[in-house]
Amino acid sequence: MPTSATCSRLPTDPERLVPIGRVGRPHGLDGAFVVEDASDDPRRFEVGATILVDGRESRIVASRRVGKGRRAIVVEPPPERGAQLAVRRADLPPPEEGAYYVVDLVGLVVVDADGSEVGTVVDVLPGPANDALELDTGALLPLVEECVREVDLEGGRIHLNPGFTD
Image 1 (cartoon, helix red, strand yellow):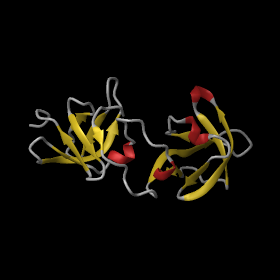
Image 2 (image 1 turned 90 degrees about the vertical axis):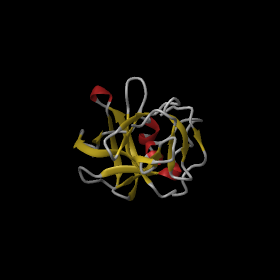
Image 3 (image 1 turned 120 degrees about the vertical axis):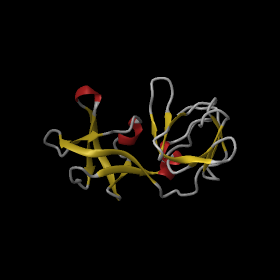
Image 4 (image 1 turned 180 degrees about the vertical axis):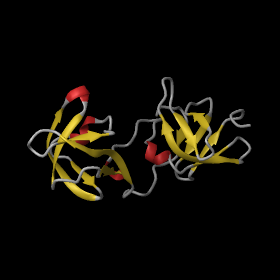
């Protein structure tokens, strides 16, 4: 989520889980399954990688591309269909300057230029031109420098520039 807003520091909860997919339908006879809602980062599914399956550590023992560019993997121990695949936030590389992981933004309080609370981030939605912050109020705010003055992860707030609230 590129933006030129500044970031003060990464959150201090290294055990926070970041979803990277879900166990989908079986694929082949070797115990592989299709990863549904898969992370865009192919490194998450490399052979030898450790992931969490419903909170339990598992190791990827096989990985391949299947139809429509989807990923099929085999993990040990074998998971149940529908199980959540995740990694710990601490295991992710630091984001690039001016970029943030969605998991770091969800839960932050958004305040306008006057310091009044506008809402709380519940999701970050991808868009054709830029990502948008989805607030618990239903509002969508563009995640661009013109709207977002500062992302203060340590303080738990996103500060807006004037003119982006009613």
